[in-house]
Length: 215
Image (tube, rainbow, N blue to C red; front, side, top):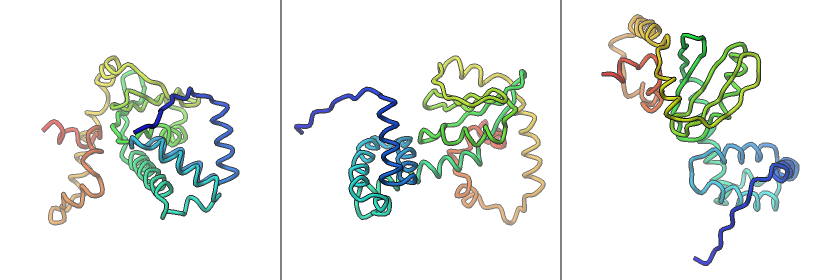
């Protein structure tokens, strides 16, 4: 009730010092967990990170395994949720190609995972121009062929218009549907199992479910 909150301006040098301290005095695994926790949608993530740092600087590398303490448990839980969602989007993300040769994908993740998935596609598609657009946060990862990727906040209205322009999605929609129809075994169709392995929330921008969305 009597707490006073103070806004602290971003200081890149101080942030780097804290990161170095976390790596040396706790562990690089702890630094990674904190990084992932910061991407969580949990409103209390900053408080859990702070409390975990207090615990970590006291106990050292053992802190990450001390799940009996709530800060350690929360950081473990939030970082795992972010990491799992990023892994899922690496598997489920779909690109469509525009007339000018740019690969575009739209996603709507719960957590702010762009910085976790962009390196994967930069490694897999180094010679392509591509954009991964986070619809909810109005932010995108941009990659120009043979150059490093970068993040940028974008104007939602303008980008939504660009992303709705014609791509090759319709062409591949037919190929996907033909593929699924050819390998499906009617007696073994199990929608509940399918939703377990591919939850509905990932399907909004997937090419092979375009007809399902429109229906």
